[in-house]
Amino acid sequence: MYIFAAAVPLLKGAVEDLMDHQLPPETVARVTAIIESHRPMVVDWHDLRTRRSGSEMQVDFHVVVCRDHSLEQAHRVADHSRWRSGDAGHAHVVTHIDPCEIECPGPHECARVKG
Image 1 (cartoon, rainbow, N blue to C red):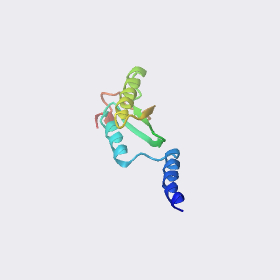
Image 2: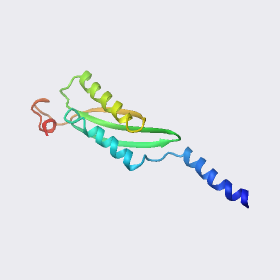
Image 3: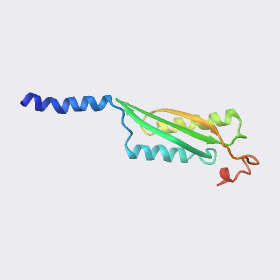
């Protein structure tokens, strides 16, 4: 019985490490703050997903950029937000770039970018 009682917590810990779990709320809040810090280049963002798989943390999200930005500018924004989000705990971060769906006169006149 004593061996069984000692083995149960060890087995539970091993199984927990194999299961995917959402990252702690503090880490998710840090990632959210990092994404928000990229405004106005990031017009909006959505589909933030975080998880811990074993010892590895994984984060992925979509960023919305002005459709008038060049591919290079949009890529730079996604790269920087991905790099900074990795600072939230050395996570593997994947970003997806979406163009803004609202017709606007350009990034310097857009109410969403200025707002």
